[in-house]
Structures are given as C-alpha cells and as structure tokens.
Amino acid sequence: MAVSAASGGRVLSLDTLVRLGRGVRTPSTPRRLPVPDGMTAPMGCDAVEVPARFGPLVLSRLPRVGCVYADAAHWWWLVPSDSDYALEWPTPAQYAAGALVPDAPAVPDLIHRPSGTLPYTPPIPLYLALCRVTGTTPTWSRPAVA
Image (tube, rainbow, N blue to C red):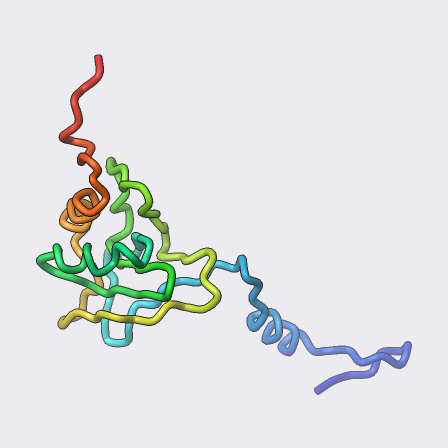
C-alpha cells in the first residue's frame, strides 16, 4: 500500500523499497554461481575461471568434473572453498572466492552437472590440467630459490 506524503508525493513502503533494491543490478555487481537444486556444498564453494578457448581443453583432461558454468567469454569450475590455499593458479585463470562472477552480465549457463550431490571438481587435477594447457610449471615443481 502506498501512502501519500504531506507534500503530495508518493511514499513507498519499506517492503517495496527492499524488493526494488534486490532487483537492481549494475554491470559491476558480482553474481554468485548457484549450486544446483539437489546438490550440497558442505565445504563451501569457490570457482576457477578460464577464458572460453581453454574450457574444452581443460575439460578433456579431467578425470572427474563437477559443475561447470560457461558463457561466450569464460568457463567456471566449482571447487571447494579455499582451493587457492598454497596454489598459484596459472595465468590467465582467475580464482573467484565465494564463486562470485564479477563482470558477467548474467549468471552463466550450467553446461555440466555431475551425478551425485557434490558440485565440486577436484582442485588438484583442475590445477594440473590448467598448468598443462597454459604451459605453466606447477609451483611445487619449480626450482627453489635460495
């Protein structure tokens, strides 16, 4: 119900303002990759993003694939939270804590859903596949510098 203000203008209820505010999205508003219905993420969710040209190359090298999202420019793999701990993901991969996609105009499409209830791609095989397709030496294989 709208109420008229003393000045004759329309006053919106707090419920209406909250609803309107939830609907407002700017291009820079991050979007969270959703965990599909029927799946659980007991370890939390982060995501690893790669340019779309690498997507099929990485996918074919993985022994197990969790949820994968894609748009024309990027592919994202859901991984357990903190999968960036002690790993330097190879460039041009980007690690997205909280599975937040900062620059996507919309939530990307789910292009792969695993059977079972866990949405995760195991992070170490994903890391190694990314290192392989980008020509990057895994951090633990690099010579130590004294």
